Image 1 (spheres, each protein chain N blue to C red):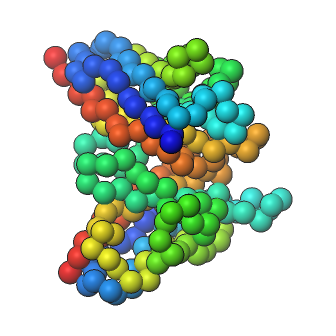
Image 2: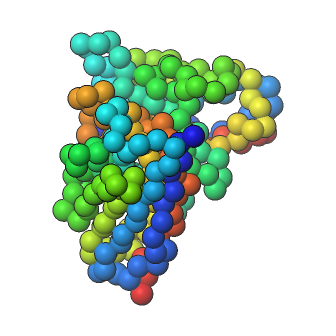
Length: 113
Length: 123
């Protein structure tokens, strides 16, 4: 199975500050024939299901604020929140869908400092 | 709009079978662009993909669970279901149903999720 490792496990950031969450895959998730990274990011707030934020590593899902962005390729990826808002408190997960079984990172818990 | 709703018993005894149903509203489960799947989350832990099904019955399972899992679809009721046999305490989790985008070849990310159903395995 592809192992997805996120860092850090948790972080506390002040409102308005920039947030960076990393995700590393044990194998490349870049499909060479279409040059797409088969990686998604989800946000899970307490008591709620995960919500899709980004797919193809950097494409925002409809309705997701543009302060959320994704970057990276191959095995190393980053989720960035440009200016932290109170409603962004959540656990964030990366997921690879390059291979079966799909696998998720362990999650990164984001809190307000 | 699209809604998914899980239903089923919240408590299952060890060695018995866990059964859940996901009712889909707002879209037809016979979409040619989507698979329908199950993902679970043990208490305080991360997410694990269980398996997925296409409307005509083609399935894909996580090899770690494949020997105990069956996913089926009922297009007339616009529902799909999950059965996990011979459950143990480690199967205690919130079980989510979800819609996966499908390319025609690959099952992609999950763009819609149900609210989740807590299932506890205990005698």
